Length: 194
Image (cartoon, rainbow, N blue to C red):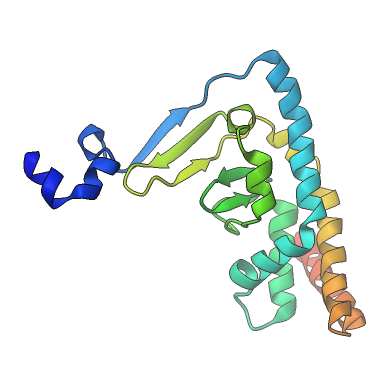
C-alpha cells in the first residue's frame, strides 16, 4: 500500500486501509440510561413542537420537491394529505440530509435549527443507524419514540392546512386555496368510503 500514500493522498484521510466492507454499515447506538430515556420523551415532544412551529417551511420544501408531481393542484393536495393521514409517522434523521416523518415516501427536509436541536442527542432518540462507508452519509432510522410522533398526526395535519391557507392568502388566493383543500379532503373521504 506504499504506492497509495503517494498516488491517493486523500485515501489516508478516509482511512481506506481500515475499511473492511464497502456499502451500508448497520450499527446500534449505546443504550441510554433511565434518565436519558425520560429526557428522550421530553425531547421527542420538543422536536415535534419544532416541526409544528416550522410547518410552513416544511410544507414549502415537501410540496416543491416531493409532492408536486401532477399538473392538477388538487391532485397534489390529495396525495399530500393522503400520505399525512394514512402513512405512519416514522421520524428519521440524517445529519447530511435533514429529517423526515415519512421515509421512502416524501423525502427529507433540511432546517438548520433541527441540526442544532439534534446535536449530541442522537443516541437518546435513536436505536440504530446506517452509515455508508464510501460517502460517510448517516441515517438514524429507528426512533425510540415514534409513538409520541404518531400522537401529533392530527395536530400536524391542522398545521399543514393552516400553512397552506396562509400561503394562499399571501398570494391573495385564500378562498381558492380553502376550496382546493376542501375538495382534496372530500376526495379522500369519498375514496375511503367506497
